[in-house]
Amino acid sequence: MKKRESFNNKWGFVLACIGSAVGMGNIWMFPTRVSLYGGGSYLIPYFIFVILIGFTGVIGEMSFGRATKSGPVDAFGYACGTKGKQKLGELLGFIPVLGALAMAIGYTVVMGWILKYMIGAFTGSTLAPENVESFGAAFGSTASAFGNNLWQIIALAVGIIILMFGIGNGIEKANKILMPLFFILFIILAIYTACQPGAAEGYKYIFRIEPKVLADPKTWIYALGQAFFSLSVAGNGTLIYGSYLPDEENIPEAAGQVALFDTIAALLAALVIIPVMATTGAQLDQGGPGLMFIYLPALFKSMPGGHIIAMIFFVAVFFAGLSSLINLYEAPIATIQEKLGLNRKLSCGVIAGIGVIVSICIQGIVSGWMDVLSIYICPLGAGLAGIMFFWVCGKKYVEEQVNLGREKKFTDKFLPICKYVYCPICILVLILGIALGGIG
Image (cartoon, rainbow, N blue to C red; front, side, top):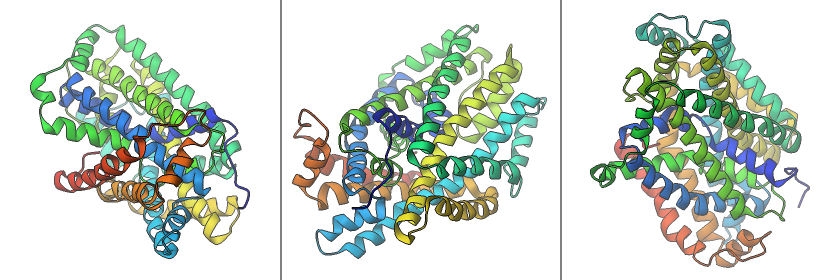
């Protein structure tokens, strides 16, 4: 097997995986879901699903990537090759790779918005509008077709330059800076928010438990969707990062750390955003881009020291988004390297060219673009990876790969839970997403 780049150490890998998991879902969706579905009544099923998916799908994708030392195309090809159908496996492997590329392109548009608002927080333009309607009009102009070309090209260029430096010198070093700074900045925001009058009402709101809401199936459905998409199980990013992991590392332990810090990031976002809303009497019933680019800037403007808070907030959000963008582009870049034999920098250039052209063209339809990917492609990719590893590769292979680097054997219940609980969950997420118009 040809020599493959790898992470320099375990924490470099863990921070990169945390970076891939911590993204916009943690910041602009999780606080809204917590608010809409009963605070603690939502957190209980969310924690359950994070533990379940973290210790099945995340471990599985990391182990599958490390075992095959390849991206989804060759990994799926290896699995199906054991049944004499390698070409079919490789063909199926292109689904999560193309899904990652399409998601990365959509994310590029969002990163353009974030970069513009981050720079604007320092120059004053982000908080310049006078009222919520004006903030909405400003964002509408930015998010329109061809409304933000320059900033998203710059955001893409930053991500691609990091990727050109490779795994250890690029992805790992970047995440060793981005992720600690993200957590530090959000902790600062959380402390500041806690000192504001009325913040206590927000905390009561977050941690209240309502038995009626806890018994509502919708609470569990949206908690499942949030946990599933937040942990980045899609058969691409986590799998490709796993392929750069040395055999000596303990994957179940690393997966647990990724799940833990991803959850902490989501909770930090909720501990900032919900109390901020409470201090002004605003209702948190709006998630997605509207929360981040309309309602929160309007609230920051009304707060003491709001300009400084806006700066810290958008810098932290940019760091979280950049780490996710890097992860999403890595799978298609690695696939170009593996299948076409191009060097790292040229592969990055090819993908960057595609990213620039397509992202500029989809600016006006990016919301629908991302919805299609999250509803159909992500759960399909996760399900295919799960089936390939847990069902096709076989018990002996799975247990050998998961226990590699461990002193003590991982639980015997791992494979049955993955086969009969996790894989059906992937199918369930796909079905529920189609039926409800998305649950992620």
